Length: 216
Image (cartoon, rainbow, N blue to C red; front, side, top):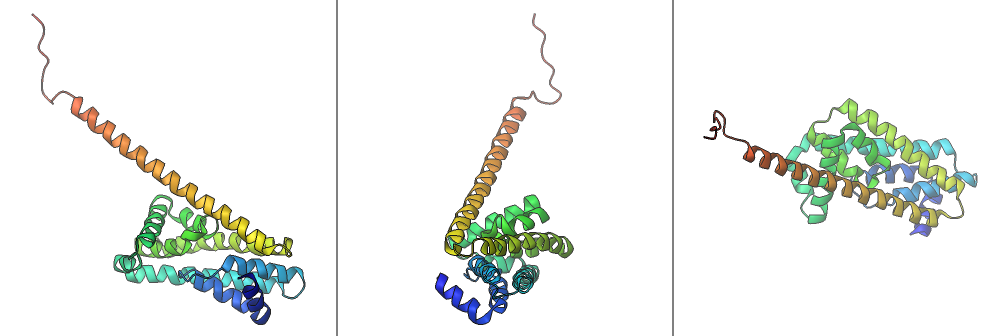
């Protein structure tokens, strides 16, 4: 995989990085993070311009996110149902919808870098949920700037260890996603328990208008 990515970046430069960033935001299984790490390594070796690599990755990611948001906005719930045909896709979409519902723009921001595997799903969910375009775009641009800077910068710093860095970052991102899912489950369980406690409390209250009888 790494050799193929190196060959593509060698031949096409920042253009292939922009294309991969765009397509990965639309659920295509493209290793964009590895592509950006490789781009950073080529910057360190002097073969590519840092502004070209960073700008291409950023532009591709933002345009891809915008396309996903627009698809979700136009397609709505019907489009989401078609996307979630398999259990795995349905689970990912459910997590993305929960993130948007709870966090709004901050959820979009986190999905671009800290919770990157949910990013494309959050784009669709944000559009379908009616999150304002301005709010989505502001948080998305901020998040993608962090994502691109992080990966291109790591590729620059560790140009001889790109594969190792990619594995480490994949594990870190996976851990963060698992942590977010666990946190969401904990909040859901807490809400369910509170609702049950509230129901029990209402059941123990005396009926309205009833007056206790005095002992004789």
